[in-house]
Amino acid sequence: KTIKEAQDETKKRRKMFTVKRSGTGRNYKKANDKKSAQRGPELQKNYHEIVIRDQVMQLDPPLENAQAHLMSQFNDWLSIVLSLPRIQSSRYDTTVNDQMKNYRNLLSLLPEGMLIKVYHILRDKINEVKEYVKIWLQYQSLWDMEAHIIYSKLGDNLSSWQDLLRDIKRSRTTFDTSLNHKDFGPIVIRYDQVQANVNNKYDYWHKDILYNFCNKLGGEMK
Image (tube, rainbow, N blue to C red; front, side):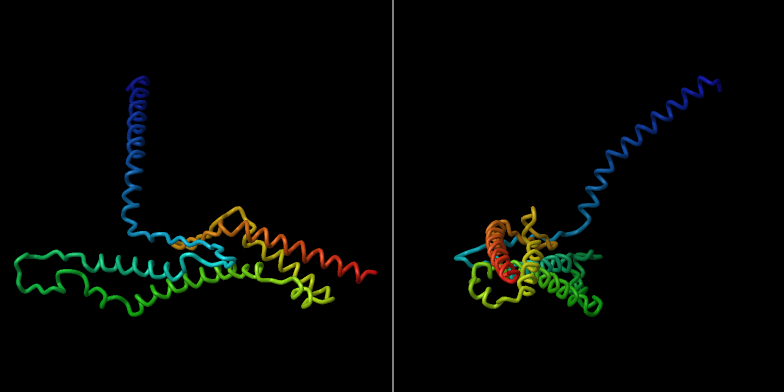
């Protein structure tokens, strides 16, 4: 081959390689879509909101709704799998009993404790969400507190005043954020309705306690 022929052949190969790569790119999205379809069922989201009604903070709807909904989804998927029809060698074989027509016998073949493990995972997730919601519901005390009771308990103990102010600063991280929700997998807790109210109440008490602490400290320094 001459040098020109070799160069022309190289160009043709490069062009063919480019076409193949572009075709692979087009098929890549299809392959991804196919993989997404094969991932199996996805948990439906359960949305809950922390709200204030009649000066009382509460979760709406209750967390028990999420637990019941998630368990219902699991039972539905289980029923779909177990009810799948088996491939029969003969549609008119009278020796085939009802249990052999689907996969309901698979339940008896599962490893011991498998189903209980599912319930434990669900229980642990619900308990995790409960602990988070409990932190928010503790801010109900911002509406229930009475100043004279707090200050009478603190008395003249400046160390107790300092501990309280440190706790106030540390607890602010829960609601002093640009986010308005918290995700726990299939459970979402929204708190945008109470975030501003809690923040305003918190600021009020923080300033009031800091003001009284300064007065106490000034009195001790005289």
